[in-house]
Image (spheres, rainbow, N blue to C red):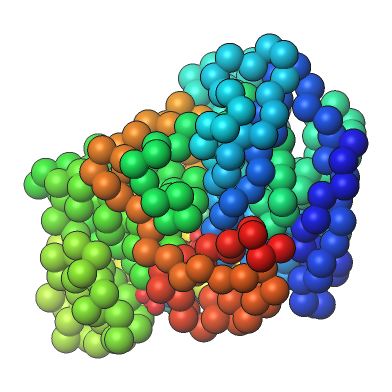
Length: 347
Ligand code: NAP
Ligand code: ZN
Ligand code: ZN
């Protein structure tokens, strides 16, 4: 075991504080990573506040992890010391169920292990995330990061990137698709970039008027301010596909109205209040509403390679570890451009 510096939430209401965790020594298939940068996902904040009722404390968040390999177990084949590597939201799964065998570890029917807030399958205790100096995981759950990409800006690909890439790919978005991305935050801005790179016509649907210029700079072809009835009217019945990334409670029905017949709205945002959706809003127009969770390991590597090929990274604001609580306050106010990334040298 080795003591590792980290930042942790100790309960639902206090700010994050410096904290020391114990990491295991590398097992034969483990890759140990010195964390250089870690993105700040809104899920970290949901977890810290126990919005979803599943948090355990002490909680060390962080699942957009990039860094350098510092040690490998004897059986590791994919990595060597000095390589760049990343860890996203998963560090283990059963590898045996139908979903795992298909590379859909995020839907493991025997329960996957989250990078933080999960329980190690060997019974050794809780997992701790990337707001820390180092981490280790089985090589099957470690991703290769291209040297071509800016490392800090690549960190958010490990969650925001794959969470938006996976549904866009699954619903076969491409040339000719009319895509609406709802919410311009960490996930939303990656959704815009990736959907544009896939060839879609992309409209940013945002409740923040001041984000219009940025949305266009990120590649969106149109911007619709969701509080402006006239602008919304113009895109009623317009989209083949809407990617809903909103973190707060909102009315899904008003966005279902923006789908054309047979269109699909995929929700990746996870507000706390259950949605109320009259079936009339789906039946009239054969519309679908669906969800999607991050992505499996093979697809995450595919997304990283796609982003390297298309030169896609996140637009980031680098922060020091001690400023994490201020970053959380800004996240709550939709004031992020468009992902905070912690420089782990500051821990
Ligand atoms: P974020 O950076 O905070 O972005 C969320 C965006 O939602 C905001 O920037 C804002 O965009 C919009 N928004 C916020 N409050 C709103 C309100 N009251 N009404 C309407 N729009 C509002 O968060 P994120 O990191 O992208 O995460 C978004 C959500 O996805 C979170 O719930 C997170 O837990 C979830 N998530 C899910 C998965 C998954 O696998 N499904 C993975 C990662 C994250 P505008 O200002 O443009 O309106
Ligand atoms: Zn996340
Ligand atoms: Zn499984």
